[in-house]
Amino acid sequence: MKYFDENTIEKIRRGYYTAVYFNRTKEILRREGNLEAATMQIFQKKEGSILGGVVEVRELLNMATGYFEGESWINKSGELEVRSLVDGDRLDSWETVMHISGPYAYFAHLESLYLGILARRTLVATNTRKCVEAAGKTPIIFFGDRFDYFLNQEGDGYAAKIGGASAICTEAMEQGFGKEAVGTIPHALIALNKGDTVKAAELFHKYYADINLIALVDFDNDCAGTSLAVARKLGKKLWGVRLDTAGEIIDKSIQNRHSDQAKRVEESLANARKLKQVERSLDFARDDAKKARDDIRGVNPRLVRLVRNALDKEGFGYVRIVVSGGFYPEKIKIFSREKVAVDAYGVGSAIIAGENDFTADIVKVEGKEIAKVGREYKENMRLRKLL
Image 1 (cartoon, helix red, strand yellow):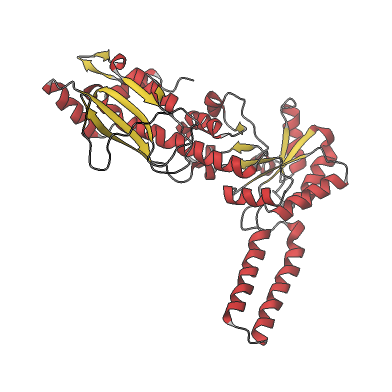
Image 2 (cartoon, rainbow, N blue to C red):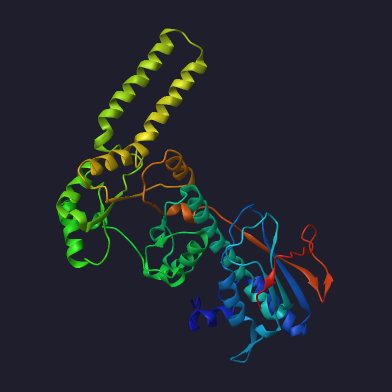
């Protein structure tokens, strides 16, 4: 995969994406003729992060190390020595991830960029790995396209692969992932067919018969009923259904059960007051009420079981169930622990949430150790030659 086109590289070389103080430092060093070799040490602080972005950084250093002489670019990447951990490595906090050695005047303008690359791709790889580990053997599909700036997709596709995702959802992500994008029927297609999920599924199969048909079944807030309707109409043409019920909504198929459950909780509260139990007992009852509400809103284990049972009962055991909407590692762990019959998780915002910052410090100049206090040179025997 090629990360940077010629126009982007031209801008990078000219410091367009660089914090101005690095550009000014580069200019000062060049005017002073200071080509002393420095060793830049890079680390991050989070225990267990999954490293991503190393391949991208290698391309950056290869194509943008050097300087302009007039309008001619003088490539000096050959004067760098780079040792690094590799994409997919699990990191210790404060562990040295990379050493870049060479005349700092040639690569000062790249500091903002390689730190940002490592931060972004490591974030995506780490979050993906957390979801994958929570899901066990159940595949994770990266649905991150709608949650972030679109130009992140190519590199994020590669980072999601490093993290262990099984599939992605856009052509751009394919570039780094190496597999074709997958997807389902969107709510928009159903809406433009007067809310008829069955018709939308039929149309999808009509025009994309060679692609696995996965019907979105929450449009009418009746996942079990809609799943059966699509399965009855399409039979073996239906590969799977996707449940995407909003987190604040209770599906029709469990609303009656919810009413019974809520009634029991209210009775528990009333009895606690009647018996004049201590406030702690009331707190427990309130917690139970909250858990009861949370457990049955959105896509929850009970809803998935209702859909699975409904499909199996009518002979549609071959229809797979994909779930999406608010799935974070913690929620996936609940599903895994309860052995909910899910065939794939669609995960979006959870994979791009948070931060995983990297820091770079000069720790040697001309082979002699010199560094900001607390950032001294640290060797790492796991580093391998990158350039």
